[in-house]
Image (cartoon, rainbow, N blue to C red; front, top):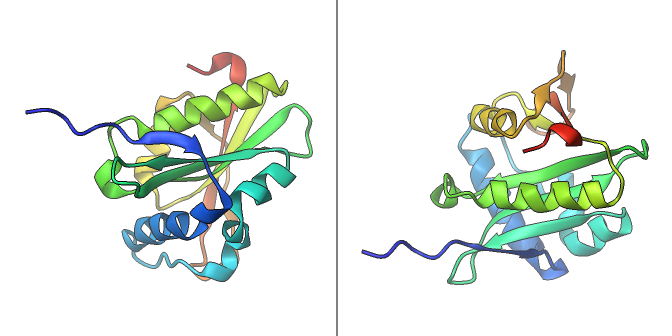
Length: 167
């Protein structure tokens, strides 16, 4: 039996916003008390434009049937030596096949090429699988948590990666 083809990683377009929103909403639905609210994701109205206007980029993972099954974005911060990763979501059926790792590799390459020495990210404290993923890729959790006044009343961990330590 042949394994299904791996999803294709490609730059997001502005038309991908609704599909990325569906992936995020499905991921949130896996956690009690975690709700998707469209108003909290204005960048998804035009994701390619939103991230490009910040000097960054978003990628999506697309299954063989054209369905978007994942996303990841990267953009510079106010610190010229640091970039931030965000919108890291993969549909349950597409997990554990390297999709997020492939998108992360592209994001880290972009950050390095731009001269960044560090990459940071924030992730909901409930997303234990995501924490393990980041830690496997060399990110270290920073002390403390931050509250996000969103519809889910989220708390987030901060993670940091020195690019020289990236695998």
